[in-house]
Length: 174
Image (cartoon, rainbow, N blue to C red; front, side, top):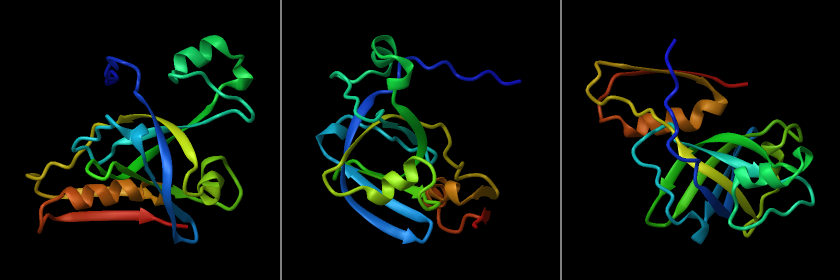
């Protein structure tokens, strides 16, 4: 069994402000975040970088500066936020824009319905980024496999490959 890498510090909190949304397909909603709350966000060259989106408990406001550790110490469990992990589809450091694509199954779940309702100006906390994978441009060929929730990571990996790279991508879409 492979040991998990030890995280040196807790993931950095950021506050994203919705800039725009776009319905990509009947089951995929794009949300682009921006704003000063993304200062210091560093995605690097990983193609699987992700953020943990922090959905607050209804009617609960958390103290600033935001810290999950502090929330867990000071609030009862039923007031803790719910987190969902999402792959970053794109990060533009010059514009300070972070793009996240959400798979949507109607009004089921937490994040998908939130993404459908999101309007410019809405805010959402996020922790991260994390991630470790980038395709090796010198590999003879690449195999990418996933379902529709993996499309952001697969797309980022494809975009990172040099022209002419041999790739087999299999995506299950419902």
